[in-house]
Amino acid sequence: MTMDSNDLPPLPEYRDNPFIARLPAVLSPRQSARALIDLPAYSEAERSYPAHFRFHCLQRLTTYFDPLPQQIELELLMSMLIRQGYLGRNPNTTDFIHRLHNDHERTIRKDVHARLHPVESTASGFALVGVSGIGKTRSVQRILRLYPQVIHHSEPFSLDQVAWLRLECPHKGSAKQLCIAFFEEMDRLLNGRFRARYGGSRSSVEGMLIDMASLADRFALGLLVVDEIQHLTRLRGENRNHLLDFLVALVNTIGIPVMIIGTPAALPVLQGAFRQARRASGLGSPYWSRHPNDATWNCFVERMWRFQWTRTPTPLTDDLRAVLYEESQGIIDIVVKLYMMTQLHVILLGAMAGRETDERLTPALFRHVAKKSFSLVKPMIDALKSGDTLKLAEYDDLKPLNEHLGRIFRESMGQLTLQEATQAAVDARAVSKSAESESVILAALAKVKGDNPGLGTAELMAAVAEALKQPEAPVIPLGTAGMKKAKRTSKPATPANPEDLRVIIANGGTTGISGYTALLKAGVIKPPMQDLMM
Image (tube, rainbow, N blue to C red):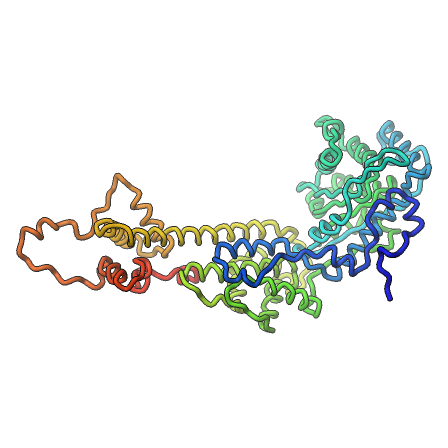
């Protein structure tokens, strides 16, 4: 029987080190999975909610996190990385005081490698490389949340311990901007003025790097995470090596564990200087490629499939499994967003039709949404299918895709809002207005439709509403022109034309349906579903 981690005594090297003793307990793989998982709230009753409510429910999938074995392994590696780095910085020993003396010497001599006392570094460097969308950043963020970021100590002396700090490599790979970001984060955590003191416009890069190392030592930084390291590829020569050399010095000289995260584009950078910082760690540097289409992937898809807000339940079939993998190529971020956007699409179609429809998810629908909404990542998906690693290295950021999908989501909400608002306006006017007012609406509808024969339903109703707002260009009601003339003559009235919009509306009223629905049935206006599928 395996004992729970909480029932085990702490390891002696950890127990006698205040920086480690105040960290959370070491987790077993099962405890790690429970701590990391973040599944959205869900109720079967939500399937029957109106479309706009279900749009809100779909947003829950943006934070979906279901840890796979590689995330559990990463949690164990980061747990060791933080604790092993603190072994050589025990505040109960003279080594910690010696490190502070060395920090002062580096500041005086303006040399990051300067020192007064020889001290041993137990820190390691660690690199996590993986394709865009595989979940690197999200996994690291979830793991870091397991640790308190700031821990206050009163013994053996008063000290604020910063357990971890995460920075993003500046877009242009600038060492100076990275230092400034570090000072700003420390200001936020400790209510200090480090940015003003060390990151001024006159501060040199060399000086800021030394001050950054000194602060990391003084506040017992447990782990520095530098994300988006592929941005360094935008630099050339000494500028790029300068930042990498400093990260290596943090590990080997200062004794601060450093973890860097990047896409395959960063491999040429990491295979050089940073390799020295992880030579003795024994932790390796994992490479997260796409997930294979295996039992683990199928388990992930099955759990995700439960979070379905379509009115009609769709069981998960082999055909659906196949299309999900084909269109995502095992990339977690893409498969979750494809699932979310396809549900959005089918719910919107039903809402625009103005009636309950069969909201089933089909392989054809997934392919349609992938082609229409995920075109930005099609080259990346093709590179994954072909195994072209050089081509794959060109796609180092899914932020444009996320922004694109955000716009689609907002536009879909706008379509629903416009459709419901215009239909409500037509229904209200058809029921509550006089015959003359209804004629004004019909005249506007006929004029707009004649002037713009290609308009879809939503655009047509919006144009009618806009025409009715114009006081300077009133619309003459249909049938009012020539009314007086008709009274002065004895000419018999012309039989009603069944294609007349007024007749269609009136006949619809006798059967209890709205003017909008009557026009829709008569074929005068196109169904919204046709507009969306064109």
